[in-house]
Length: 311
Image 1 (cartoon, rainbow, N blue to C red):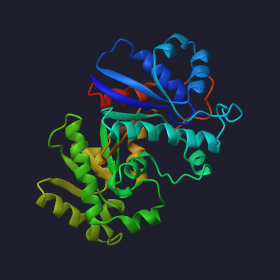
Image 2: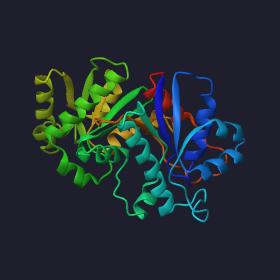
Image 3: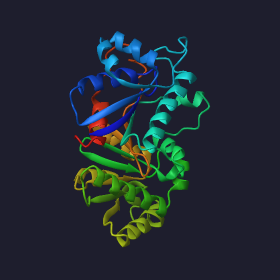
Image 4: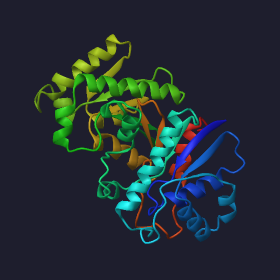
């Protein structure tokens, strides 16, 4: 049985609803045991609204991140809700790091709300790194969905900043983390491909020197480390072939667009390379439908099953 620490995400988003719906769907499945980290009053109101009061009484709940009633407004972006999301995820990550759990699954957060709270945050990978005492850029995002696994060398930053940070060493580190994650997910010795930075991987320098200066040396280093890779090549060409188990995207949109196109609202985002394994939904907090009782838990269920080794 896998022990999972499950945080609720932004309490004003769909996080509390999909947490309850997912756990309702998993009742009787003894392959995982989930402990919920989140605001109890928000969960109580949500359970009452969607008819899952009996489930709430059975939950293993660790209260954290409770909101004042004036701030607990479904669909409203506010700083206290953002702070609550970080507090619940932080408590879950620290408990996992202490050995109480095997993995963390985090509900969807809202980055604007978190920034309104004045909390430095650029996604769950950076939070895992910070809490585990690692360099922020040593934890990477792996998106899984639509038959694709794509690890991202850079993530939530401007393209200009990302280009400044991409180095052969960073590409190698992201690829190594992706290969280790594939092994954890049951894919030993994955076939790996590197996306180019520029269109057509710079077309032999026609579109710039970046690929020749950064991605090609990374590919050579990976071969020397015993990780054979294809590329760099154009992301469009590699994805059209679909011959690889793992793709390495240099920029956020290179990896997110294909996964979300093939698995809309159903992808899993895994923070890899850290001392704690954390998975989350590939979608956001969906403020437009929060509190309406129509949110589907599909992506959260997939995340729970993925880290529990069920899928």
